[in-house]
Image 1: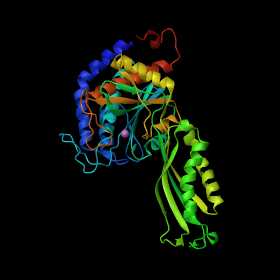
Image 2: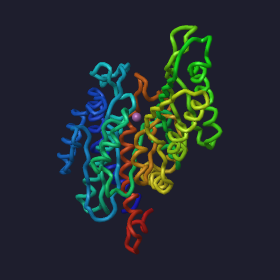
Image 3: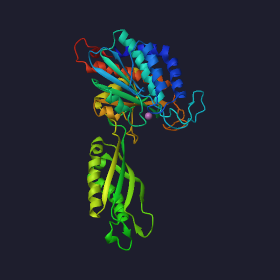
Image 4: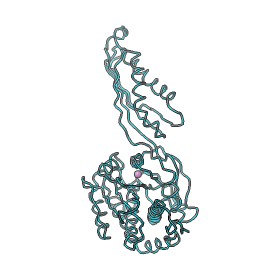
Amino acid sequence: MRGRELRGELDAFLAETEQDLVAFRRDLHMHPELAFAEYRTTQRITERLTAAGLVPSVLPRGTGVICDVGSGDGPTIALRADIDALGLQDEKDESYRSTVPGACHACGHDVHTTILLGTSLFLAQQAAAGLLPGRVRLIFQPAEELPGGALEVMAQGGISGVDRIFGLHCDPRLDVGQVGLKPGPITSACDRLVVKVSGPGGHTARPHLTADLVFALAKILTELPAALSRRIDPRSSLSLVWGRVEAGSAANAIPDDGIAEGTVRCLDENAWHVAPDLIKSLLESVAGAYGVEAEMDYTRGVPPVVNDELSVEMLAEAAERALGAGSVAPTQQSLGGEDFAWYLESIPGAFARLGTRSPDGQTYDIHQGTFDVDEGAIGMGVRLMAATALTALWESRPVTVTDPITTLA
Ligand code: NI
């Protein structure tokens, strides 16, 4: 199929379905569900996929859906949307605002879900017409906001046999019709660190008979980040910042335990992998110098999303093909976390930012109670995801003289 034909087919499909997709999004928006509680959302998705002749499979917890379109021959490309809402109050004054107190689709996951549904329906039509050169796996992932959803999908074999995966996120700083792309890291890692120290306490008159734990804890608080900054490539922007510290209860008594808590943020995947072991050895050496025992509790958040270069090129080609020339804009790495990163630890793929701002309209931020999108972004997202899946399928096949890739416009 030529790119121009694909654009025409998407135009025709959206002329028929776009209004219905907007209504689907508004229904999800009015009924947001938090991580791993997306039962109604899951039901709405499966109803629509089944009605289109597809065979969706609900994940064992009862939230989240995986569904294949097309034949098992040829490559498999996965498209992922996250379906959960945020635990904050909807502050909009729209007819479709949240009806659930303390829950709101303030991160645009209702839009991602709707885009993937629309893409599924379009690809089902393509498959029925014999125009899908391989298989597309649709992943409606639960629980992106609480780390765990992507790992749950992977534990259920969600990406086994998948050659490449794509996802997107609403970007309220980009105009509708624009797609933000960046090869390499596009989000950041954020982990949590708890350090507990202990040693013999006693009178502040005789610190030499104790472990002088408050002094030792203060050294750990300053020396650990300092040593880390000299042991890790500064380009990784790895930073350990403390948020809580507690020890002792009286001015003249040295306590026998203390605690410090902080976060470790990092822009680089390699530095993220080595951080826990390095921090542990630095902690042991600083604590050992003062004779205190130190224990570390390190909780992994998510790694950075690191976009594969070839996959970004496929997204860029698809955007040009389906949204038009000039639709691709460069974007920056954000300090936020995104659990799409887990998929990219196993298989190549890329994550795009989809413009949702009305031209000359208000610029919102995600995770704000007033966050909303220009709903024209839904049709744009369907165009982008459908064209990306087809582009990746075409380009993942061995090129022969009769291959459609050789005839692309
Ligand atoms: Ni989000």
